Length: 565
Image (cartoon, rainbow, N blue to C red):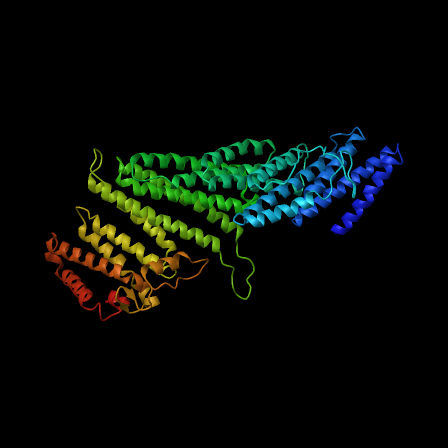
């Protein structure tokens, strides 16, 4: 294909030469030849870009632009639709060549010799043939370049310089689309490439520690992209601003009340950037993958902020107020995950059944798991607030503790809907462990026995995990298969689709056994010293028998058998 283009260029060059010097007055035919030559060299430039021949692509762009200048000069139709279309294509080809060169330099960052060789090869291609001031054709040496568009004088070895050229030329190309009612596919391609080049330059600033420069760069990009109607670029720029802010937030020290205030301010800005990005992106179906990425990162921002504020409760002057802010962050994340779940359900409705297997909804499962983890984290936050609760003018300590405890248990139950005994046995047991620990540690002034019995029932309910799945014999701190509690948690967190966990529930048995014994001991003590001790002798004996069995039979029975007893 390149050989054919080269042959065509040679013939067109000869035709232009003949018409220029031997058949004066044939302006209409000469103009046609200039147009044909411009279109040919433009196609040649696009072909060179697609094959990584960057120096040759720059040269073809120059040739074509000289022909455009000659064609426009020979007629009084400057600014015509044809000229705008050719100029757009030339600017896009030149921008793509600069962008590709920047990516090549990035790939060869640690290979100085490779960079020198690549630049030498491309410069040889660029300097192979010089265009004349008015017309260029194969085999003729010419004077200085005097085309109509702004091009680089030489190939640069600097990534930032090449990216700046690419950005300027993509912006110039997009400005030429103004007034066109229905932009073609090339418009979308140029917008996407502009966004990528602009993002890459900002990332270079960020990676080299120039955060202020990166923030300024992305902020300046928004009005630029708005002026050319590149809403996708506006969205991606807001996204990068959010990511930049998120990175800076993670670098803050959490060991002071001042840092807590900074985290709240930075998080608020980050969330605003994500919301602006989503608003600029428009309907989800326009860019579903980018929409999902933005939503997922927004949810992660909410979770990270909530977790940081939860850690900062120990330094807060008003822990409850800060805890409520953290809870709001977790609620925000849950709302975002709910939006993603609805979108995934719409996009991934099971299609035709093939070989009796229904396509799994992987995305829905992963989002549901993330939401369940947030419910669990929110439960721990409310448990922490319950422990810190004090008597106020309006509420007694018991009332406040009971309120926070009820919230914590409700979130644990919501998480348990996803973390079922069948699919996530270890996570399910962990939920019940936390619920029992909260009930045991936050005993009310009245109804102690009832609270402890509720805790015990939650723990004994885990028997179905061990009965349905079986368990290894306990050897030392681990189960016989060698899986630790950390291994089991990691295995369950990596589940995809509708997979069932293969984590061994015996890995978490030691923690469950300790909590069962603690609850039994507290319950026995409450029944011995409580007001209803005399009327419940049989129940007290049963509890003592359970506690005795737990201590004496633990070495002789499996976890499932012991819980069953």
